[in-house]
Structures are given as C-alpha cells and as structure tokens.
Image 1: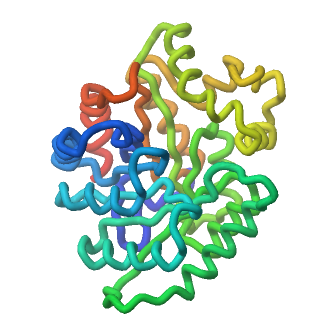
Image 2 (image 1 turned 180 degrees about the vertical axis):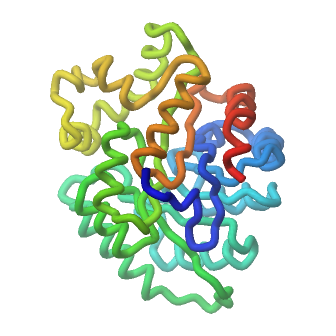
Length: 300
C-alpha cells in the first residue's frame, strides 16, 4: 500500500476519516449547532458539506466554523454556478482570515448544463479565480482547493490546478484509477455512503431512494457508464443490486469499516463517510458515535 498523506492538505489536518453530510440542508441552525459541536468535541477533524438547495456553500461553511473550535470544513462541493469567481475568492479569503487553517474550498461543475462542457467551464472559473482581486487583506499561508473529479481529464485538472480531487458515489476501483492518474503526491478525498442495516432489501430500498437522482441524469449516467457499468445496471433509474452495492455499503459496523479501509488501501488519503439515515431531517447521531469510537483513534 502507498504511504498516504493521512488526510493532510496544505497544512490542513483532516485526519484519515471525516463526516460527509447533507443533513444540514434540512435542519434549523440551532439543531445544527448542537450536532456539529458534538462532532467537533468527539474528535472528528473534518466535515464535508454539499451545496444543494438548502444552504449557500460559503456562508454555510462560515456558520459551521463559527460553531466549532477545531474541525475543518470542506465544501464538497461549492458549485461554480451560483457565485462569481471574484465572490468565491473574497469569501475564501475571509474564511482563511477568520478561521486560519480550517477551511478547504471544494469546487465542481455540479449538474449537467446543455451545451456547456464541464472542462471548459471549470477551467474558465479557475482562471478567473486565480486572477480575482479583493481589497480585504489576504492572510499568509495557503488556501487549498479541491476539484470534484471523476473522468481522466478532470482528475488531471485537479492535479494541475488544485491540491487534489474529491470523488463522490464511486466504487473502490475508481479510487485506484484516480490515484494512478493523480500521482502519489496530490490529495485524494473519497466519499463513501453507508447504511447501518443488515437486511438487504431494506438497505437497498433506502439506498435507491437517495441514489435515484444520480441514476436519472445524463451527466451521472455517463459517469457510471464510463466506470464500466451498463445500461442494465442503470435499470431505468432504479439501479442494479451490483451498482447500488458498489456505491453504498450496508450491513454491520465491521462490514462498513472494511469498505472504508478498501478505499484507503486503493489510494485515498481521506475517506469522508456519509451515513444514509432512514429519513431526511434526522441526524444519524448514533451512527456517527459508533463510527467515532471505531475510527477516531486512527485519526491521530
């Protein structure tokens, strides 16, 4: 196994494992504050947050940072579409100044847009980001960024124009491929979805309910086909057992930990774990506690 970076990116110590959660999109801030403080106090070093329909990426990161003392917040991802590169630059400067060493900017193309090529759009945004100016003082030290990357071209761009890549809903085989393309030094953060459920039918039903948007959009379908799955695996948006099981590990704690470790052995520097709960709007606190007890000693 490669000698990995153990979650270090430009001075940010994310640990080997982190929490990936979209649950903050659906809950009031008072509840979020209590939960994220428990994650911080439990010893998690990184929390990864998406940008969907509930929270704006940069203000969400700032809020979570204001609630905590040690944890690093990673945007996973901040879409390139809702804000200009100049606004993104100004926000990242503020977060770096207010919370030194505790923010990582993750950027990505997001959903497919007709007539727009992802590589061209992301490259243009990065060019504008690198040339952006704001009057606020820029704190010393690095402000690392990651790119959401799946195909060879975007992974190469993540190596050339960022500190590494963040992948989402991918099998272990993709982690091996991404590491080979990135080379040994660039950071590779991998999301792994998990379900604490031993019954196969119940687990797959829950997984399919949350995966359906990814099985019904052309951009994501193309990603899965490129990874070697077939139209039969897409199954009209349902997803075959093979595809569902490759993307979401379900079962007992040992089964879940085995899959997480497989990503590390395949070349991931850091695995962010997304607990798919039985319903939206309920924090998987018990599951996070089980994971912290099992994984955080290795985070040190």
